[in-house]
Image (cartoon, rainbow, N blue to C red; front, side, top):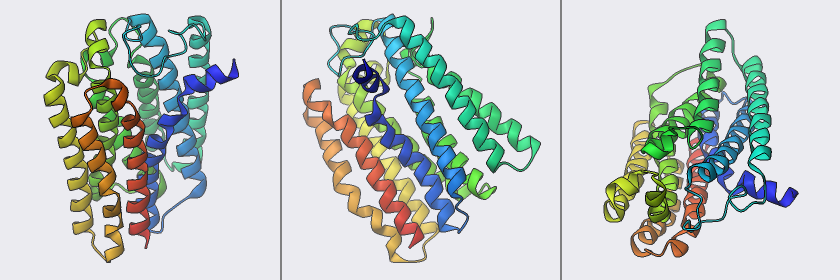
Length: 296
């Protein structure tokens, strides 16, 4: 039973959350404003929210038909009968509470005013709602094609800018560029997933961006996401250039080219599936190199 729960947590998605929180932390560290306790609590909250989202996705897709026998990716716990729908709902409640408590601890140790507390508390509730309603409910927004916007917002702007602000208590416009990079790369991970599932999603009435665009245009969309992410990172470095170590992230470029080529070449969803994880790991490697370059 424990094995099934670990599978349902989908731990392979956590590197993406680590990358986005890490980006905000690295930028703060480059300004000598890094707080280890605040960063750890931010990361813990992000992990709990990501697991909550994964559990809600498992439950919601099984209820709405996206996790049918036509689906190519890894089977989900509820759909496969490994975990009951009732048990999954209880787990969602537990992780929702844990996320809330972790978030409160984060705000307690990081914020300095009532206005800041209320603003971030609102963002926390919004994150909880977004994690659950992506696939759960009568009209989940993931089934209407709004998943990309949500990922861009929560993995990009809120994760990176929020982490940076909690460390520095400053809101520099420059942070928007690395936040945009993380956001569009996270959308890229989702896009690979949705291209892989395009046929089963269409049958289930899940109108993701690839379902709406068709596979060929979805590939062009994927390339656009990668281009915007890289262009934003390059723009940030040019505007904040101090030494050549800041270009260290260029080492990761081949990983993204491999992903772009795979999305174009592999029309068989089974061959494309590994590149979902590859895109997430590539994003983490990119952030590590980018962040180390900023600190050096």
